[in-house]
Length: 121
Image (cartoon, rainbow, N blue to C red; front, side, top):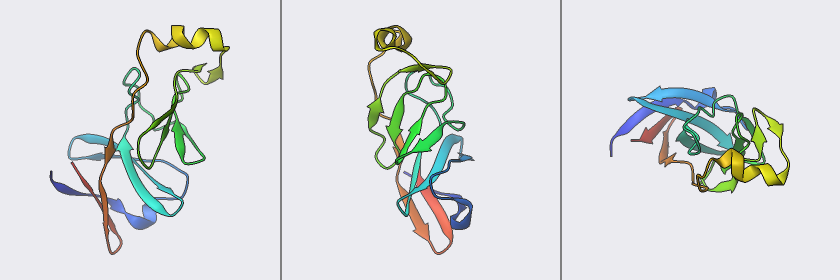
């Protein structure tokens, strides 16, 4: 794995998403409870970008189908419960999932050196 500069520490705000292209990897950086984290900017459901998703209680919510993922470890919290941001009734969730099982979000190891943030790709 290679250690690559991702952003300056001051550029990463609490409970927001910073979208970066790091050595060909689309990455989202965030600060959750004071900890810097990095995840792939790609929902494992259909591969759509998460950058316009909302951060809520340390998780990113996919703006397309409502899946949510813990930003610190990538764990799936909820899977396909909305359509283009509109909550849908429970009976539709399997339809929205299109046969895909819940999966975790890819994470990247983060290292801070002074005011610089690096990720391992």
